[in-house]
Image (cartoon, rainbow, N blue to C red; front, side):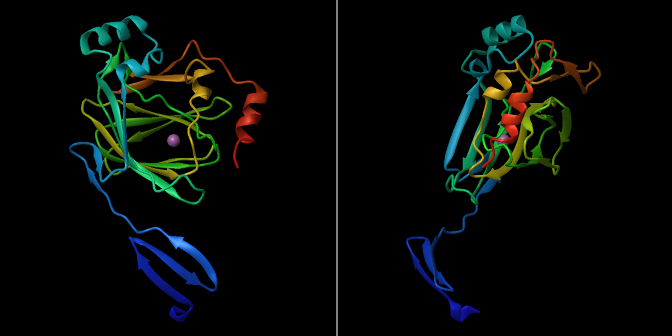
Length: 231
Ligand code: NI
């Protein structure tokens, strides 16, 4: 089949002609996961969320205020380094997230959480270090949890709201990958005053779920809207 295929390399990209179809090929890339530092070496993008960015997410406002007073609103809560080749359908984004350990009152440190804007896009998380829980909620409000330890692969199926929680005593480091046109919708959690369950200290070195008493169930119309939001 090679005679159907002609590769011309220029500036790291390739122009290929296969069966008469012209297309631009991206150059293959590798990045190293630095587990100790909790980052992707060679990432094209980095952002951090500070404690101040997570205001309002925790149940215990007094404990949050006390923590901010002690650590500072600018202290890093989690960091994401990722490689985004594009945002085109069919492409993929991958990266590393590092979450610091800690609690606000009885509740373990968490990420803001989201559903994918194109809600039928899945995601993979791979545990590199630490102990985590992926907290998942269906549009109808069903809660599921997946424990993530080193070498655990966690599959977040299409349509599930997801949030990471660090239930350990050290940094939680995970590699992730998701379709490049997934997008993130944070409002679905905000509009329900959080996810239906919280991940809290069980008092015995582990974690358990607790009810979010402020939770507002989604209307049938909103649920239908989630399932209709994929393209
Ligand atoms: Ni996601």
